[in-house]
Image (tube, rainbow, N blue to C red; front, side, top):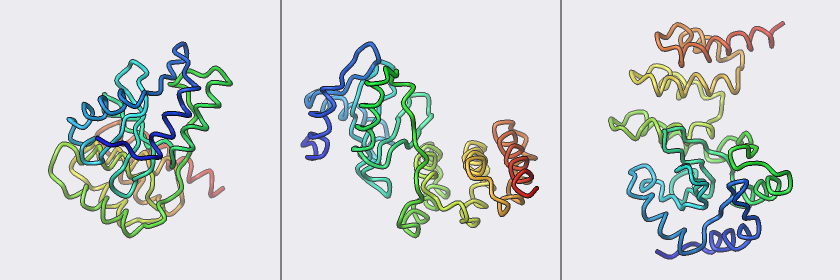
Length: 216
């Protein structure tokens, strides 16, 4: 496969930051190609056309998304299913690696940043809605990656997510509300707080407490 120019530039600059003791191990070009081809045997990775950027020896690489509304962003692609969209651009990931190298931070201690809502909310909503209505094992993971880009005032998408029959998807809604906690979310938080799954109910209860503090 042919790597994009911005990935080649990232790998060249990141090489100078290599520190095995901190598990900062950016890939060489050949390693990037090989590990990307292996990674894309996973359906979600193939759908998003991920490019693997590093190897910390824990099967949890940072990857560049190259397809879909999050294209150009960096995701922490964890083998246990915890998929975290971390940085809006490769340049931001590179800057954080520089900070980590200077501050002697392990790769697992990299500071992540809250992402801004996607500039094309209509496109994002179409994408999220399609994931919500898909009946396959990848839907929750794809939602988890893209959901942080949603405008927190979009109650239509939030309601559909909160009413999913899949508790993993309801959990995504609860944790999203926990990060934003606005008074407009009260009704949804009350609904989720009564969920039979603690991983859904507990963050929703924290949302209700946060809203109560805001309204004092």
